[in-house]
Image 1 (spheres, rainbow, N blue to C red):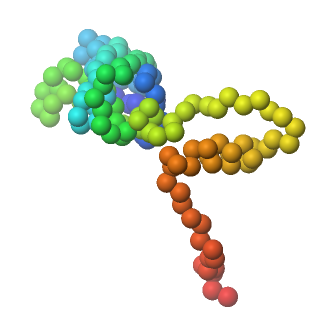
Image 2 (spheres, helix red, strand yellow; image 1 turned 90 degrees about the vertical axis):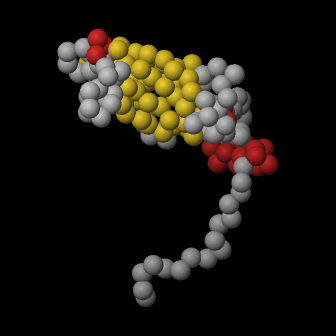
Length: 148
């Protein structure tokens, strides 16, 4: 295979602009980029090596009008050289589309005050988001996996 996607890694969380990087060789240096959930598709392009494997980078901006129905997307990088037998070489990576995940945010603005701890902040922010998240209960007891 002559395409290697280094970014994003499988199941990385991505936003409306997906930055893509890797190593590849493509016919006349051309690579096709596509992001789909199976219901809609957004495309882009990047350039790579034409004679030997070279680094490439590109991006796909997902417009607000994209009709994605799932928060799981598939990013495909393809060498559209025709590929001969077996079709064009391509690599696909699954990613998670943050804007479709309830409660998705990059960060919370917070002014640190005396007594703040990371645990306290996490509990406060997660409690505020509780209605949007499915809660999980912890087991009240655990049996030892090692016989005594």
